Image (cartoon, rainbow, N blue to C red; front, side):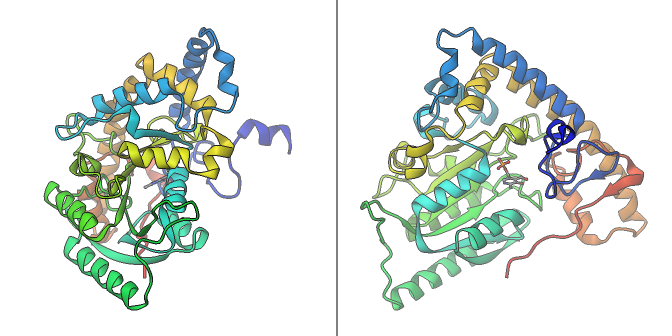
Length: 387
Ligand SMILES: Cc1ncc(COP(=O)(O)O)c(C=O)c1O
């Protein structure tokens, strides 16, 4: 590796050089150069603050499996301020630190799902999630179409019932346990309920209740990819997270049916590799106490969790997210929206893109994440449909 490779610090060959060239590739959800500089400043201030703690060097030890207790406390305070949930507050006991939403998806799926479990996915959906679920973890995917207010719940309900029926006919046990006697779910619904990638749609309150109802009736696990929730522009208060509709009903197993998978990748930077899972405390206990993965690694990213704890305590993350939302993405959204509208009006971009632009109004993330020059814009024109 040459010194310049080390300086770049980019995952070469896979991620486009989003922060090194003038070309703006809007297919990649990653911060631009200016945002990275701001994150570096936040990180340095927070590291300095952390270093004043009496046992600051503990950060480099194996950490507590669910994350440092101060991390989950500060995170709960941050999320409660951001979500402003009328239905259900975030509790520290319901949180577990991860190395980003990708690792959260992997952890939940590998620990809580039966090896034969079928996974229902929105169509279209985040294309790398399907790669993880199908190619890496070997699950069969069943697509469910999206509508303007979220997944088609009638189709979801029908397909879940049909799969369950098939499973019974094959004589497979719905309640298949893992080797240490813990319950595994027979199926999962992977969803992006808030600011869906790639359509931008938010699931309506009525549909949220119906999804929870379907999950309870069929003992389905619902994994919500909640990485964009806090990047909303409507006065800063996002729609209720789907998990809030399930609060207080932990079901027979005590595990509940809904897990929220959050991340600092879009709020700060993906290089931090830090995120969280939120669920009812019994499910968090199950993940923290019963898995070889966490027993071996301890907290998935103890160092980042410790430093971001200090950043949360200083209010730096809150201020940065507000700045992204109200300044950076607001300006970029307006500019990109004007350009795209022009293209649509002059017939240069088709109706699919137009409808996406309209649904993206609820969230400024997808287009304007990167600084752009209009002459060099690469647009994400392809939605991935699962078959
Ligand atoms: C819907 C969705 N989930 C997860 C991720 C990846 O998140 P993380 O970097 O936290 O693993 C992305 C990144 O683009 C995404 O769009």
